[in-house]
Amino acid sequence: MITKEQVLHALSHVEEPDLKKDLVTLNMIQNIEILPDKIKFDVVLTTPACPLKGHIEHACRNAIGLFISKEIAVDIHMTSKVTGVDAAQLDGIKNIILVSSGKGGVGKSTVASNLALALADSGAKTGLLDADIYGPSLPLMFGLEGTRPESIQINGKQKIAPIEKFGLKLLSIGFFTDPNQPIPWRGPMATSAIKQLFGDAHWGELDYLVVDMPPGTGDIHITVAQSYPISGAVIVTTPQQVALADTMKGMAMFRMEGINIPVIGVVENMSYFTPAELPNNRYYIFGKDGGKRLAEDNNVPFLGEIPLVKAVADAGDNGFPILLDADEPVANAYKEIAGRTAQELSILANKVG
Image 1 (cartoon, rainbow, N blue to C red):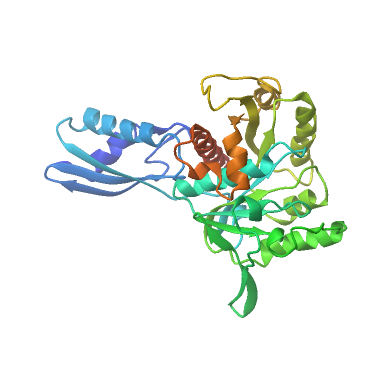
Image 2: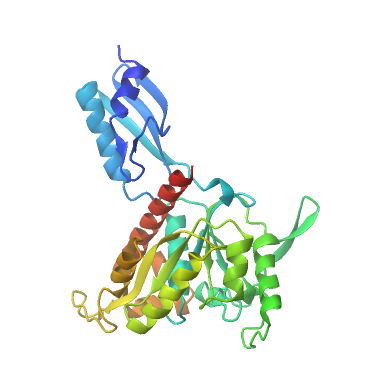
């Protein structure tokens, strides 16, 4: 008769590749059932976006076959419970991810939007906050121009209810302003608006809140970094030297004393141009591997590259981000980046823990 102890012993030989500990020690094996002809158990991953899900499941099956029996059936339920740095608990939000760059025009908002959608697509509860006060683009990119959030009462307090679309909870200053008028606010007004978007919204339970930061390294960056428990920052750049120089400054800001936010990794956007009629051709218009070198020079992970494809721009302009089009190869690039982002966050949370 097979025992639970035997199952745990077998699975103690399976290591979580990123956390460098075995699944039993990490308490990732739960709900073991032993039936006459089958062993059933859950593997609780640290994120539904785990890119190593298949690898871990295969390793578990091999361990049961090696240490118990190759004949018995194995029923594995791969599930997840998103981890977060303990300090990052903010009204039910486990992880706050800043998407930032030292320079405008690198496609940061597009990356933030599709990263959030990819995390939600994996099964994670995800929100997207547009913190670009002076140039909010979320309403346009999600087809929500003219939409206004409702006010709801939570525990006797008035709260803003984020708008839900495509499985995301969304909030932007653009929902409250005229899209045809500029927002000529001084720093204190802008930072006050950001605090309202963070603190006066009823986000509910979220695994990830992705924050699309404005360009540069100004008041809003410092306010967000010092006022809220941030899990980490994703840095977006293009391969071009001018962009890399400014992005370097943006990355350095997160490492300043008093801010000290971990850099999750670097995403290189507009890495190369691929024409629709020649999908296998790559033209490196802005240079090659600049984002990779930036990541290597700063000893942070390179999360991936996004090609310069017209369909990406069209999708954002049409209010239907490219991640929602399963037939577009670039959607898979965003999913891979989301998986690596979630992976790195789990590693950071484990280090802190």
